[in-house]
Image 1 (cartoon, rainbow, N blue to C red):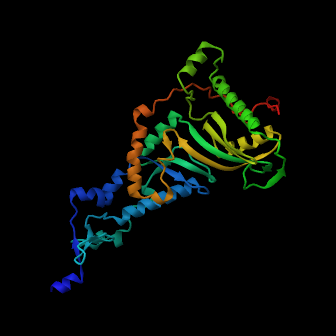
Image 2: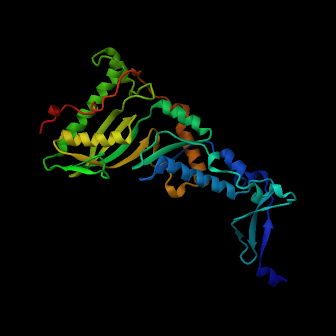
Length: 348
């Protein structure tokens, strides 16, 4: 009898206690999925596809847990090693009415049960930090939007080529010499663009740059627009890598789009009497959220998302949401060429 027991694996049904339900009961886990978390969006992935993947992973993970009242988690105990094998299935216990069976009711959670909303979406060919709210966390996303936090990008470009859509994937229109371009020339264009946008912020608010009011506003710290929808504003732009024809810019901005950043690279090339196209756009920071907080694709699982929600909760406290703002005239129209100086401003 002992030999028989040692060569067989017996199944023991463990009844779910209140403490175990917090980890092994799908409705309990679903109720904990409230808040804000951060993921790293890969390149060549749309925001819609990103959301579909997250919803699929979450709903499947919840459906693998016991989620109906007659289901209990089972564990297999090996009498050979004395170890407990991981539970992989759930079985209906004490079920007399088949209308409550999983095969009759189907999956309890579907993708539409997982509401998501992003803080600032990235284009298909962009990558980087993406902040997402789930369920009640959507309200937090709306609050973060009103805070107007800066976003930081590393944008890579290449001199000497002009394409139809300013990207490396577009149809090539022209090849231009770039051998005359020096690091100092690129720095001058970047500095002029940054200064132009700093002046533009006060122009939007109808404040004289030489006035006491402008000084008091600037002394309070970083000036942000009060409205959510304003023209794109560059708070900082500098070259962090220069290896012609390739270069990399670090851009601090608000209200930007992927097309804007690509056109910025194109216009910088024109200012330098050459051409340029954008080869990569990567968001490295969104407000208080950085690459350290972003989950890679292999970690888009329920346990990792729950842990990330706990970590990100510290980044959405009231003291983190206080930002100085500047009233912007909502009637001001955006000028697509306002981010670059006149051609005469750059002397070679």
